[in-house]
Image (tube, rainbow, N blue to C red):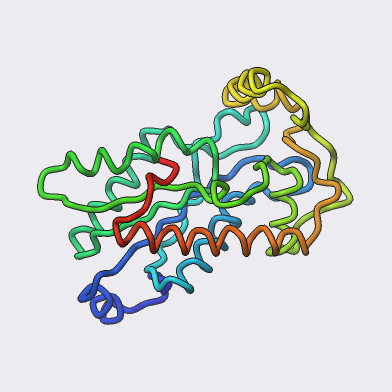
Length: 242
């Protein structure tokens, strides 16, 4: 159920029962020479739509801007962490006042993690607000190692978008074979300057990405999120990637 397409009466009918709001959060930032800068927002929007359809959640509009300063001097339209937090806290409070007290925030960009993982605690501290909030990132629901404009993201985008320019796809930093210590070091550097680590803005190798692989990865992610979210709603789940 897409909130922006519903009337006030439609939404009031939903809030008479125990509704769950789903908020996707993406980013606008470079994704190598072959993917659009909207990649994170497009992927998380698609996944959230499918999860909403299967689970009956109220799907809120995607927050398409994220915390992406690490991609400078490549193109990025970034929010400060405090701004993203304020937006999400305000949305959670607004939902509560509309009798929607159970909320899932689905993250689509790694740089957002530090900001959004604090949302449940921040909302809890607001007097008179008693919401239940789950924060999770979609890549925690797949077996493959996540990348940036590499095989995984490119395959997913091939499956959902016609704007992938595969003729421009180039291999980036491929971390296979690196020690855990070296990988941790590179991750820390990339969080400050993605360019200094990858050189071309790509973490992984997108050249062999396929539509078939993208569909399979999406099916895995969507199925796992629906299963985990239903388990969380019953109060029997582990702590999910917060």
